[in-house]
Image 1: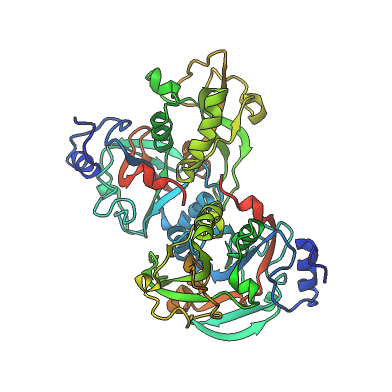
Image 2: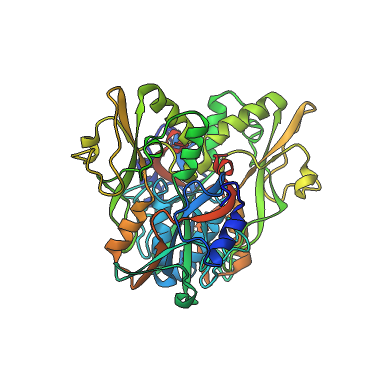
Length: 261
Length: 261
């Protein structure tokens, strides 16, 4: 597949069942996003959770009950068919992975679309700040912290962070660069000592892969979208549907459009 | 009263019925905010409206149903008593002005607290950018535009803007300065020609007072919190309560803490 394909062309491949793989690097320049679908009965509380925790859960679009079209970030798209893979959770338990959720769709479903770190990694790479897990062809290392999210109704849980090791100079530049993208997690939440945020072994991430940290580098931590999934598992709603890890929703907006104004 | 009073001391005066006047300039440095109270039945849709229209409606805090304490921006405060004056709306009609809403409070009420332009005006004045309506001791001029908000459920309506005339140099500085405060309306939405956004007579604002525009100045327009009230009047919910104009909620957070990160 051509990596320079448009977002709409990519979603069409998904809709036709012709693309079932992860999305990193695809439709370059377009914002990729997390998807969470919940019944309206808990939608206010989850929207409140995102509002109170904007660094891990930056809202890009929220549909109205029953509407599968994300009218702000991808008019004409259908979130029931346009992702390569979905995970279905019942009372907080993963029950199946599917490539289409049309048969599960309900009139009371609300879809939440939130920003992801791919957008700020694009900005870092554009500025020649190296991103280690991309260099090492791994998944980004992610850790549960001892920082609690602001709870909202049934939703609560620890802040989950992703980590990128950087030289001191690049860490300073990365604060500036990612700070422009509050819709993609914004500035780091910590840099330096992992133990201060409850991470005892930097080489044993809770999710993803460990990466090399060079002698002159410090670990830099950003809020991570997995935070929302952790809150979902803890809240155990009757039903929830999310993108499968790495199989993101490709929107029609450009990474650069997320820059703060 | 001492203008250097703390936010908590000021709220105590309100609670005791000892302060019934407008709040501009009081408790200097503390964020003042808009208040809107709605029943939970329409809270999801109003939260969605704010989420989709962050420039006019930047969310600082949203309480859970029945909870009168804004735990994020003013722990220990009580939004039923801690503002000097409130307006009560029934089906979109103003029915009364009261100094306390304890007798009206219900278990299903949700309070929305949103940022206001006082915070960025504080930043402009600190940077020696003059603010005309303050110089002229008037209310800021506000206008309905031909720009529609993104609707959400029953909530829709025009974007309302406030206007400050500035020299070209100060207009450029004001873009930079207010851009740091996305939680207080952020960058302007327009500068230059009022007719481009549907304003036919700059000297006849829809709300507030007209101010002097000098020959070397251009009008600069920011999204305004009155947008939310316009959407409320149009939606006509069974009941809604808001701060009376100029009688804001004084929070415990500092203006500077609203700067983007």
